[in-house]
Image (cartoon, rainbow, N blue to C red; front, side):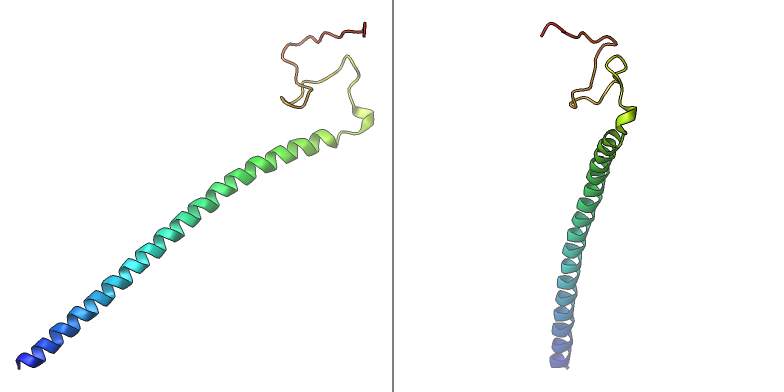
Length: 96
């Protein structure tokens, strides 16, 4: 009877270890999946920012030549595009 009990205890321990290893692998895989999902969500936020920038560029470039402002009607532009005016007045140096 001791041999049978020993076999079943050994088999139970083996199966318990196998289940433990399986759960550890599952936990590891779940953590990897979670990191990948966080990366994807972070990239979609970046794509939204880039898409917004390209949309602004497209809108600026799609203005027909007939609607372009004259020298006195120059609109405030986007910073970094050369059309950004900090104050309401622009000084023009015509002596050049």
